[in-house]
Image (cartoon, rainbow, N blue to C red; front, top):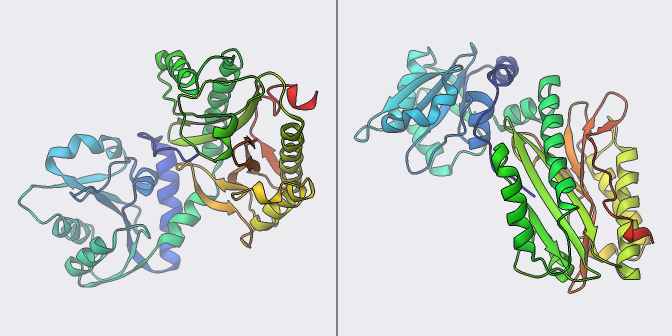
Length: 377
């Protein structure tokens, strides 16, 4: 499940990102990189505040300076950027794009090449090109991607911290699942339980046939004996996401549901076992998909095996068929095979892994893969 972009990030992580980006910029002779997307604003400027109908953006110069441009009345919204960036504001009657161009000129970026965040809006690209007419604009999406795709040791520790907190949602849920309670009631009970700790939850809780559609919204359906219950939850800590899914059972599942669960568990274990540097992303998807197909459920594995995570809940790399990108140390991703039989049930098991020098680390604390023994009885 994709989570929102967080509201804060440690300054030392942003400095890591900026230092890495400036190294890559020098190799391509860029004078600066325009930062636009909320996740990139967070990664390189320390604030998720970004453009709406009013321009908010940033620039990282080749010297490693960060400049943020925002509306004057929204200046407090970019306070997270203060330890990292110089802030430039524009008034409502002023052209914000010219404010950005002037900030670049003040930083000494007047001619040459300007890299651009690949997720800038098309109309904004043309506005930037108009006011920065002495600069040549070109995409720098590959540079931002390269900075963010392999996590540093400091980022890895934040991912582990998020995961430890995320596991608690499932440990708490084990005592709440019972006949007669609705999906939305479980959702509310979890939210109330963790609110005093400042932990915001937005889990997907899908029971019985509701779970046969991946990412179905949590509903008012009442849990019944025999249900398989898929719970997908994201927790964000200091901007870094965890993403976990477990499938619970209420009472005795059908034999077909048990067979499906066991196939998903085998598929996930095999993909994790194969995860190491040099393996293509698509190969992990193939390994998991083959096991599920051999169990007779191939047509019901509806999505890719997994996705990268970090500042965004879904980001590169993607474990999907045909993706020849090779795994590298520091990459973090979900491994989440699933089976979804229309009108009957859904099964998914999701864990997060970090690619290491010689294999992978399953980010794990107290939460087991199996949260019930019902699927093996």
